[in-house]
Image (tube, rainbow, N blue to C red; front, side):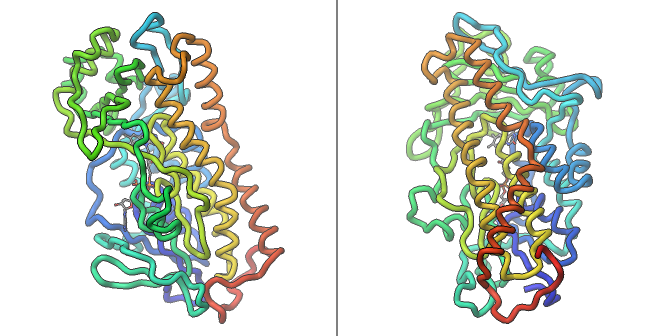
Length: 439
Ligand code: FAD
């Protein structure tokens, strides 16, 4: 627990985008103390380039101007001019409509993309170093405080234990906290790869990429579609490297591993797409096997909750996984701003669940639908570019254009009505009111 008895102590499991973003917000709240337990000894340069859409930027702004700034400092401009409008261009690369653009996702002035490692470094810079323990892998939650004898007890792989008033699992797709909340054997606990997706990926320097693919795709963010796989490129590391990938439905082998990426299968694709496939096929060591979560029936129980990929890992195709993690952080941070008593933590987590679960699970569904549309596997939609445009426009409206201030307000309303309706302690029976808070 925190050394100050007047503070609410939160343990954040996992220092990825979700955990660090939440911590960046909580750092500014004097009635909250927190500690991040991160399993790796340090952050490695892993992860694809992220194209954060408008809802991600809005969520960061709600967490604070410095959070938004950390992103913009780490990001690389996709546009050559700051005020040039840029979008992810979704283009058919195969079939009778090859060459037709069917969507412009995340259109924004001065549109940026960022490497996961650079974004993590930026967020880490906002969190006091002493609030993060590295090399601390959570193994289990021993007791979540319902006994009324205190807070939530955690056990780590190194044999140590810790206690907090509240535990937030931001521990990614294979979350231990999720397994604790839902149960090891719950059908939604473990991630699945329903359509056998494999993302073949390579990282190359921009100079190297220029020799192999069309110059425009060393700067832009294309997604080139077809039934053998969809192809994309994202500039990273301040424009010095390109992350290029080919995502293949049915590319993963049952029981692990993947089929070899075969450029011959792309013979009927557009020339620009074929060049990218050939570049990726040369070195697929940076590949990902992807998966997502079937819907969890709840995101919190007592004073334990999950967020980010731990709660709702999605396929990467809607480009909104990190954005949803940031939306979680914005809502949790806002709610914790109001919680001044440990007995109200549970109500805050229930409000978080009520507001965030439906929306984030809808994004999991949407990402699956994106995958099928990209692979020409959603009926005959690929035969009708106009229908495709309508699909993408509807999706953008739901993800990017969401009113996140309203989402925060709704969470507060749910919290308020919940604490009016009940007064239930989930942790410390002898707690004191530590401040005014919401009344
Ligand atoms: P993670 O990033 O997985 O972080 C979890 C952290 O918890 C890690 O640091 C891990 O080491 C730690 N941890 C795990 N287990 C334990 C434990 N037991 N104890 C302690 N610590 C633990 N999203 C977008 O918005 N836009 C995109 O363009 C985009 N592209 C993507 C492309 C690909 C190929 C993939 C795979 C994903 C993409 N995403 C994108 C999704 C995005 O990367 C994730 O949604 C996001 O990183 C989730 O963050 P997180 O913090 O919840 O989880």
